[in-house]
Length: 212
Image 1 (cartoon, one colour):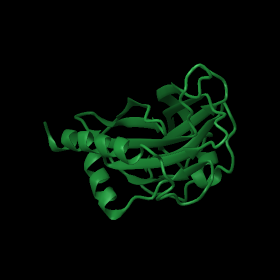
Image 2: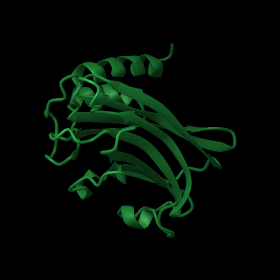
Image 3: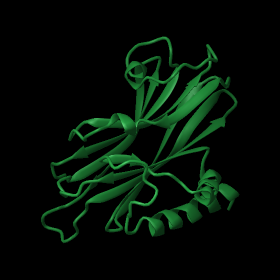
C-alpha cells in the first residue's frame, strides 16, 4: 500500500473520530455553512491525502433537513461540461430515532498527468453528528497535458442562508491554460459563458427538507 493510500486510511479514521460530536472548534463564522479552519498538524496530515482539500461544517439546529447531496460540476469557459459525484444521504427520518442537526463535508482533489490528458479526481465525504457517514469518488478527464495558472478557495462567505433544493457552490478549483493568467474569482461569471475562466471545478452542497 503506497503512502497516499495509507494517508487515506489514517485520515478517514481521524475524520470519523474528530467529527463524532461535531463541535464548533475551528469554525471561522457562525453561518449555516462554514469553512473549518485546520490546525498546523491537521494541515500536514490532510496534505498527505490530496493535493487540495475543502473542509466544511453545516448546522441546522431545527433539524428540518431531510437529505443532503454533494457533487462537483466541471465548467469550461462557463459552459457546463460534466457533472460528477451526486451522492445523496437521507437524514431526520421520522421513523428513525436518530436526529441530525450537524454535518461535515470533506472534499479532496488531485490532479494527474497522463500521456494525452489530465485527470482531476478525488472523494466527497459526508458525516452526520450521529456518526452516520457516506463517501463517493469523482473524476474528470480533459484533453492535453499542458498546465497553467491555478487558484482555489471557498465560497461559503457568499451564503448567508440555505435555500432548500438548490445547489450551493461552496468551493472551487480553477486552472487557466491558454491565457496562463488569473483574475479574481467571480463565481457568478464562472458558471455563465465567459472568456476569463477556462477549467473550473465547482463543489456543491444541496440540502432538502423533503424526505428521500
